[in-house]
Image 1 (cartoon, rainbow, N blue to C red):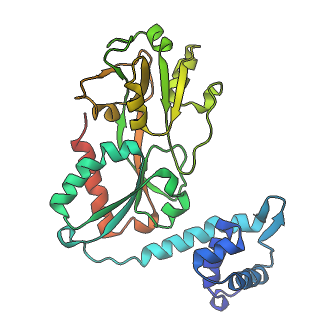
Image 2 (cartoon, helix red, strand yellow):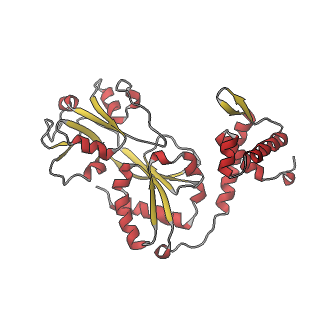
Image 3 (cartoon, one colour):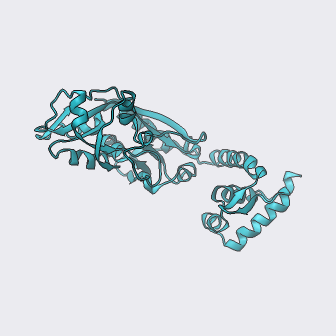
Length: 313
């Protein structure tokens, strides 16, 4: 095959087809008609002498050759798009850029307020468009559709750039008149009615089961190491809903310290140290390789890093 005779637009078609594994969705992604995308798939099959996508009981599935080609094509396109990014100097004071940031409620309430204060001073015309983890996908990040995702993450695609923002330890938060005191014993902790809170990654969360410790996270893993189990009364994916609920007497929530710190001046709040050792939570920011060398994006990443270091508690 002579690459000079190949329509390189077909690489874009192949990339989207293998990512979406659906002709209609791929066509919508590229804003072309379904017949045009079907014709592109036909040309790719002829060019590569392989069906690429075959219909199965689970829908369209990639062939072995397609799976081999997918990371190669993705890398080529990412490197090309990165090289074509404009390299103009960025002037924060006059920029009117809107940064699209996915942030968990924890990140939004702990990191974004001091970040916004810095923006008002250094880039007064810049705006932030804040989205929740359920609003976006890894594909959106990879394609540069959002500037950054800020959350705690388990597994990330190897193509992403990432940086730790900070580590945060856990504390217990209750109503000040709760049975549990400011020095919580393990027995008191286990007798309490707990509010479970967690949300990581992207997409819609799954239903919870108090019997499935493997899905309950760090707190319950730590208790399981002691052959102990807590009583979970409420499951929520929002830290601040959890904290508000915990202010009912005899309710208890175990949350990262920075989330609880926002409530430190409330008269009815009691914050205490957990009676068990819980691993620290790592907050990260991740972004697309397409944006890695963008001057305005570099400026924002540096600003976020400076804000994070300045707001340590």
